[in-house]
Image 1 (cartoon, rainbow, N blue to C red):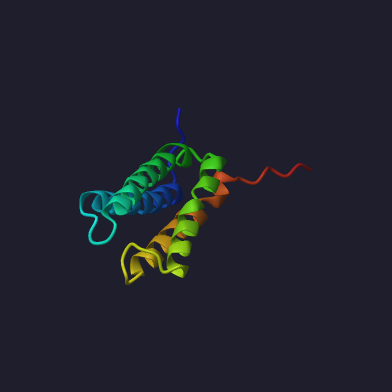
Image 2 (image 1 turned 135 degrees about the vertical axis):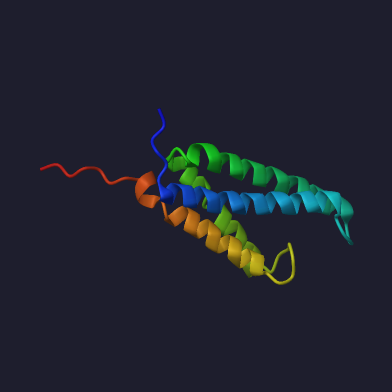
Length: 125
């Protein structure tokens, strides 16, 4: 029987699913309409992004929602990924606003549920 989902866990997984969905959508766009330049490379990057987005959403929707610690640690890939894109001025896009939004969403999604994912052990007297 599953525990009742708290508002913190719900807000957290929604933030992380939005990040995963953003990566997934970018991947689809890159596969369907790669734009100018090396279309083959862009399509390959798009396929990788589709997989990364799906994998991240799956981890978010199953083990993360069940408060499994390993899933919380794995999801730290999201803010690191977006920080690297922001600092390195990497695509997608030229405005980089979306990267800041995804950094904030992923950090909120990871920091809100820390006490539920890693509850403190009861103090012995």
